[in-house]
Length: 266
Length: 281
Image: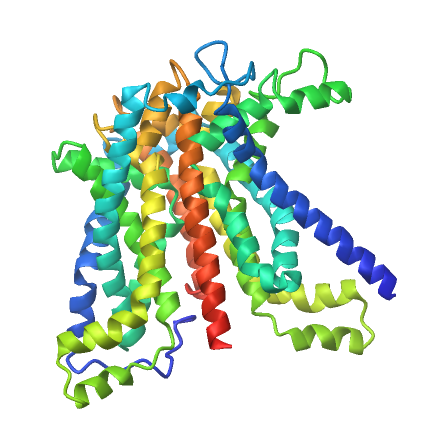
């Protein structure tokens, strides 16, 4: 019986390890192909090892421009969405009021709607309002879906907190600003920080909604898609690898911080 | 409302408008840029032709609509087969490495979506490693391509949305009371029986949420067809995006988008009704 169970566990572990490896196969391809010297204009087939793309990552100025544009949009979107989403999360976690269920549903819906539907319908709105699509319509679109992510992430992190601590601070003579700065903010800060990182990553990565609402402005993913018709240089893989490295550093430091906190609590 | 059980820490606001004031900017943003566009798209789908536009959409894209949902469904099934065991091992046997393993599941998806699609194109391309291995094993013929086939598209879709399956299943497995699992063998149930009678039913909310979160983006996707598919695999997203921007206001396209939305909305509302909105994300 127990040997049989041990075998089952082993097979399960092996299977799970294989799935985890599978998740990284395309990523490995991306990294390896950043060192390729492709034959034609598209980096689809391996030819020979080369450091060319890494030596000159900004060779294609459109790619560089689009990448910087993505960072700029990501920064603005993160600031707006983190603020609006956190306020929503606070209201939902802290207070009891009628209409809460409906609000919860409105917040969840953008997370469950196909991006193509959101992108397409938002474009119809901008055209109806005769707003030219471009930089600010991208920001508007990104904030729209990121607000929902922030609200749900922050909500999950601050649920169950005892809000009477705020009253205690007020009773002890702290004004509203001081209460927020000394009591409320330290409690919500880790959740807000996590949500802000997620927002930045989502904004940087979004293609579909952006594609419909970007006009002539090109973010990094839109630029890659547009160039697909003519060329796919290894520089794209270099950018991808750099983004991955940044994400890995942030994710690993997040895990380490979490671990340390758990140890401190234990 | 299921799922939003009032917790003890909630307070009644001193003034009724306080929570609404906090929510106002975010809520306005969602109303103006999410709810209103959906409604206006619905209206647009009925422009000059009324429900006839839907009939047009269905008859013009007779193969496209079922194909889209078939691909999304198959991708979801593959995600369950790959994702459930992974979530199970991390939740039940991950120990102190749980957070690290979860970070590893999510990490690949921090590279740009488009670049992952390019990598799939490399892997499946005629000179790529996957066809070479399959050819050497005589599974496919010398001149058979994988790019431009349904399995290529379904496989790429499954890959792209796998974490959306793993994470909700993990969350619901994590919550399972371990004492219940110990009770199984104590009562002489086999491991498989304990799994079937205890673990699996308790993880159903996660399984359902994961399936929705996989099926929805997969059914709206058009990138994977662009990179590893061909015209023969076109999905709804390809038609909507290909006719953009020059024909963005053809009511038929709105009708097509609306069909996609309505079906999915139905699924989500059913879910919310059965299990509440808390579990879905």
